[in-house]
Structure formats: structure tokens, C-alpha cells
Length: 210
Image (tube, rainbow, N blue to C red):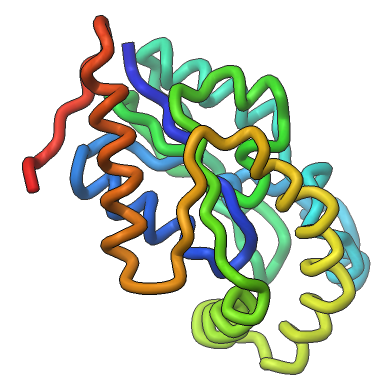
């Protein structure tokens, strides 16, 4: 049976970096919640910009759960390709089943149905000022936004939604890691936890020794 590892935490905590490091170490596939935002192509462009994308209701959780269950059952899925510029799905990517399934996103630990699928639940913790700085750097570099627009969104929705929906999920985590220094230290704590899961009877997760 495959193992499902969920990694949650606020914007700019380095969740995706941790997940990529795990994928490189152990192999496996990544299912990122960013790909499962609801398709807004049927809504006028100006209206799309007014939608709150920083709450769980923005995610197509039914499709996400369906895909995770199918991957766990050994089936391939077509993960949506989502455009943050257009707030719409622009295609799909075939994801093949693997022995390790890594779930990455703000709300990974929000839904009880999703938590029930996970063998290990990780919450990445970073102080708010550092998260904001990382968010601005990412959105300016990768999403073509201005620093002012990122800051305005952070103050209006990202910060309050973090306090309402993300931070409370910390209590569901099996492991809380602080990512304020070299990322390697945070990754190694998760690697150790994954290896403990790998030692359970009936679990097949292998990795490259360090």
C-alpha cells in the first residue's frame, strides 16, 4: 500500500520546498492543492479578481479526494493545470500512482476526510513577517504581480484567512517543523518521520540513504 504524507502551513513557509526535497529523496508523486482551485472560466474576468482564494471553499475538494483515493488504489489521474493569472484550468497533467504520495497545500489538514487518508501530517511553521517577505518575492518573480498588490491581498485576505483556516490546523499535525533557517534541517526532521512510517509492516517506502 502507498503512503500518503500531507504537508500544510501558511503561505511562504516553504511547504513546496520540503515536499520537493522529499520527492527527490524517496521518489513518489506530488499532489499540490494549488492545482485544485475551482475553475472560474465561466465567470467574468473582473469578477474572478474579487474572489477570495485564501479559504478552503476555493478548492475543489471533491476532485482532490477522488484523485488521492484513485492514486492510493493504483490508478493514474489527470491533475488539473491551473493558471493563477486567469484563475482558470488550462489543461491537465497525468499523474501516475507511486509508493509515496505527497500532498502539499495551505489547507491540507483542514478537511477531516483528507486527514483520514494521511499516514503522516506535517505542519510547517514560520513567523508572519518572514512568510510575507517570501510571499512578495515569489508572487513578483513567478506570477508577474507588483509588491503593492501582493501586500494589499495579504492584508485583506491572506493574513485573516491564515488565522481562521490555516493556523488552527496545526493541532492535527503529527509533526510541526520550524523553517526559519537552512531548509535542510526542516527536511531531515520530516525524512526521519517518513522512515519511521516505512518501517511499519506492509508499508513500502524506500529512499536514498543520507
